Every structure is written in C-alpha cells, then in structure tokens.
Image (cartoon, rainbow, N blue to C red; front, side):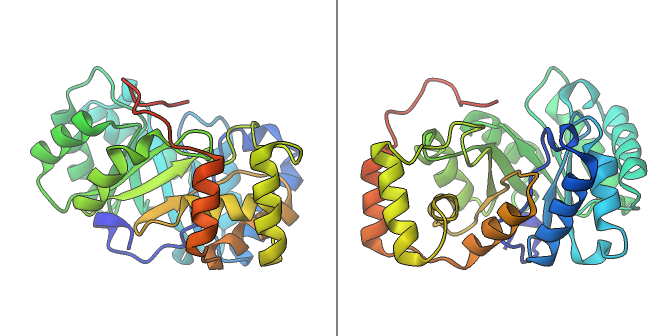
Length: 275
C-alpha cells in the first residue's frame, strides 16, 4: 500500500529524471514498454525539463491505470505557488489530476503553507494524495506535526546499493508512520557496480541463480522491506522490461545477507544524502 494514498502500487516504477535528454522515440517506447510490463507508477517533476509532456504522451489512453506522481520545486512551494505549479504540471501532463504530488526538497517557504496548498489541491480533486522528497527525520517530524497522521503518502529519497543511509532512521520512521518510502537513482546515477568488482560478482552470481539481471537483483534488494518502492530510469525498452521483472523477485535470506555484506550500510551520516 502506498502510504496515505491507500492504493496498491507496483514496488518497481519508472523514473524520468533526464529522460527528456534521450531520443524522443526511444524514451517514449521505453515508458510504454514499462507500462506494458506493469510498471504503472510513473514519477516526474516540474524541474525535469520536458519529461512531463513526454510522460503525458506515454500514458495517453491509459491514464486511469497509471499511478502518476509529480513534484513541485521549493521555490514554488508557497500556498498559492503550489496550486499554480500543480496546474502547470497537469497541463503539461495532459491530465486533470495527479495521484500524488510531492515537495521536491525542503525549502524556504513555511511548510505550513506548502501543506495548505496540498490540502486545497486535494479538496479540489487536482491531487489525490501528497508527499515529500529528500526529507530527513526532523523534516518528517515537522510535516507530521503540521498535517497530522495518515496524510503523508510518501518520502522519496536517494537509495541504492552504495548509498543506504536512509536505512538508519528515515526508513524506520516511514514504516512506523505508514509512509511509503520511494528510492530514487537505484542504480547509483551511473555508478552501478561493474562485473569485475567484488559487489558486481555477488550480483552476477545471484542473478544467474534467479535467471535474471544484476540490476533486477539490486532492485529486489532495495524493495525487500514492506512499504518500500523504487523508480529506476532507463531509455531502453529491454531494460524497462527487465526492471519490471524485479517486482516479482523474492530474495532468500542468504541472498540478502550476501548483498548486505557486499554493500554495507555504513555509519549514519550527519545529513541526509541527496542528488
């Protein structure tokens, strides 16, 4: 269940950051291949360039089956700014509502204003739920104190095998408060372990045993906890289909232990890592 959105959502979805930089036809084909493979959770944002119009084109004719998420930049996160930004995103996406609308990261506008804007958008039917992104525990506590329980759909954070900082406190907080955790850049933003590295060999061994790809194994590890989702980005249809297959993989305890040893969590950082 996707937090306060109260909707069943596939654990592996589709990210779109920098997707507009790829060949348009290939990017469009990739999003559609992902949808065909069951990755109906599609994440985008107003700051992702031309990604919103691209997503709108990809989901045309199947909007109601898609769990559509976009994000507002902090500079637009006053009460009136949130409402205006959402309307612009809806127009670019060619839809009349979002399934979830997120504050991209904490900013200078008072969080009370942002949440009031979200509330107005929800009351008008323009969004069905709202959440946050790049929020550490102190930020989450503040949002919970303002909104009350059962209102925050998700927290979207950096999470990949080489960056597991959120497991120290953010992930436990989200699980305790019924907030979905969505990991972005699950392949390390271009820094996925190569086949010759120690971690790469562990991934390859586990992938061979499961008849899948190392990337699918990584996604299965990142979504092993209940209420945890991931949104890999690709511009290749065959990779989108492979990513989708990760949602059906259940890792044995021995496999989880092997990955935990190969990619240790490390100490808790002083600040929440983000891109």
